[in-house]
Amino acid sequence: MKVAHIEKSSYIYGPGKRFVIWTQGCSIRCKGCWNEDMWDFEGGKNISITEIIELIKSDPEVEGITILGGEPFDQFEELKKLVDEISKNKITLIIYTGYELEEIHEKQFSEILNKTDILITGRYIEKLRVTDKQWIGSTNQKILFLSDKYDNTILEDARYAEILIDEFGKIRYLGFPDDILEP
Amino acid sequence: MSAVVQTLTPFIEKSCLLKALQYMEIRFSEQRDKILIQGETDTYFDRELSGKFKLTCYFYTSSVVTMLPQIEQKYIQFYKEHMKELEEKRLEAERARIENERRAYVEKQRQEIIKKAEAKGYKIKEKRNGNEIQLVLVKHTY
Image 1 (tube, rainbow over the protein chains, first blue to last red):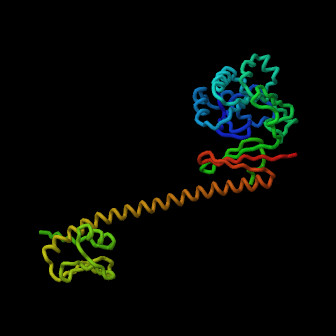
Image 2 (cartoon, chains in turn cyan, brown; image 1 turned 135 degrees about the horizontal axis):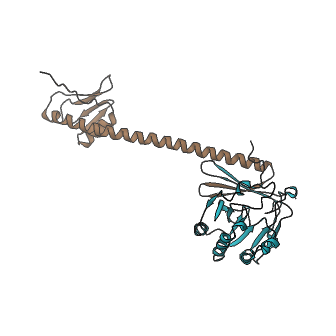
Image 3 (cartoon, chains in turn orange, brown; image 1 turned 180 degrees about the horizontal axis):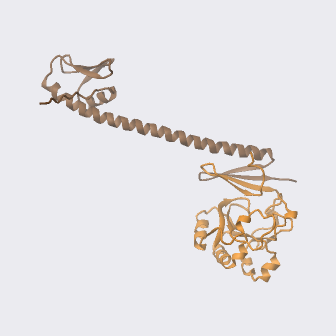
């Protein structure tokens, strides 16, 4: 699978502690997208599904996996393999996609939906940008609860961000761009 | 014909000299910078103005004559070990200083980010992932 980034522990891309995978490559390319560097299918690095699963299993505290991008459905075969493997473990799955649900059905990608707990759909539309809604970046995007593991009572609208400082002082910033890091 | 004249290694580091004497089981007592060798008449090491300890003895008995090179040999050995210990301590102190600087830098960054985030109305939950600091920021806007 072409992967742009992996975050082994995050609390802002779904309920509980999550293992988060940003896939590399996006054919949708929404205007104003924050992750333009994840558009190119030649970028990122190839990581096998086995390696990803091993990484996930290395932390028993992980409640679930969140896959975003890039566009995860643009690597459907790899995504399907990954979802199949994830479903063998007792962890939940959230997928972010720029496609609408109807498009997923049209493209015959729907076979993984029965293994997905939450699907967040829709293009990022710059003029509908929102930063204080949980898990979405523009108001047109939809949060679909596809299993009975979660429902909309878990939603808590707010602005979420995560800052990670490594042992040498290197900083990673996840979430919506803000000016927290500006001097 | 040429002469070969060799002096005894100057005993400068008192602790190494004492260790050498102890190692050789030579009984001695100390009076300030004077180390009195027991069992030999008027035999003692005394610190000269140059800083080295010089052996003075009333009689150069055979035991004194054979003892000196052995003391010298042990003195050199203990001196080298002492230097190595000091170097290790110096390196450890330097390592600790550098590590403390790194930790202080990370802590300063952490505090600055928390301060800025709080000023912007974020609530912060802090977690640790091994050596990594994870700050989860939430700001309710309603």
